[in-house]
Image 1 (cartoon, rainbow over the protein chains, first blue to last red):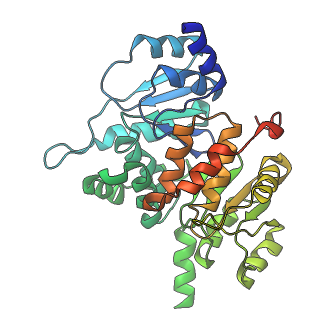
Image 2: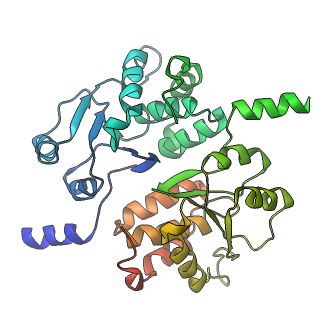
Length: 168
Length: 168
C-alpha cells in the first residue's frame, strides 16, 4: 500500500498550494506538505524564505539537509486590522535575500501563499516598477476573496529607493 | 503633454492584463495594448503565440518588426457550450512551438488571458505531470469567476503521451 502510494507520487507531481513562478529563479507558494517534496526537489532550490513563525516539521528539515538548501527563517505575522502590522524591517531583509542571485532558485512561502508572500512579491514588483494596478491584480489572484486593504496599503507605501540597482 | 505621458510610461512598467511567468522562458497574458510595449520590450521576447483569430493592429506589428519577434498566429475560438469546442490540433501545434527552446522567451496570449491561454498552459502542466487539482487551481486563478467546465474537461482529457521527452 505504501509502496503503491509512493509510486503514484513518483508519477504525479503535486505543487504546494498557490505555487507559481515569480521570476527567473524565484518561486512562491503556501506551506509545503510532504506530498510536495518530489515536486520541490525538481526545482533544485538553493534557498527557502519561510515567513511563518513556527519551526519546520522534521520532514522539511530532513529535505533541507538532504538537498543542501539554506533556510532564511523570517517568521512574521500577517497584517490584521487594527493592531497587527506586517513588520517592514523583516520584509526588507527578506527582499534583500530574495534579490541575491547567489540564493537562487529560491522559494518564498507562508501558510497559504496569500498575504505575507503576496506582500513580499508586491514589494519586489514595485522595485521592478510595475504599476500598482498590476501589483494589486497579481496579489488578488492569489488572495482570492481574502484581499486585505492593509496589505495593499503596505505595498503602496513601501519605499523601494534603497534597493535601486539591485534589480534586473 | 505627450512627452510627459511618455516619460511616465518610461518610469512605470505596465504588464498586460493577467501577465505571469509560466516557466523559464515562457510568459502568459491577455491582449497587449500600446501601454504594455515598454514592459514587453524588456522581456526580450523571441516569439509570441497569439491565440486570437483577429489580425494584430499596426502598433503590435511594428513592435514585432522592430524587436525581430516571430509570430505564431494560431487563431482559435474558446470553448463555448454547447457547440464550440477548442480545436485540439491547434493546441497541439501551439504546445509544440511553446516547448521549443529556440522560441524562448515566448509569450502566449489570447484576449483576456483566461480561457484559451489557460487551456494551453494546463496542457503544458499535464506534460509536466502536475496533479489536476493544481492545474485547475492555476487555471481558476486567472479565470476568476469565469471558470469553464469545458476548459477543465479539455485539459483533463488532453493526451500528452506524444509529447513525452520534449519537456524538462
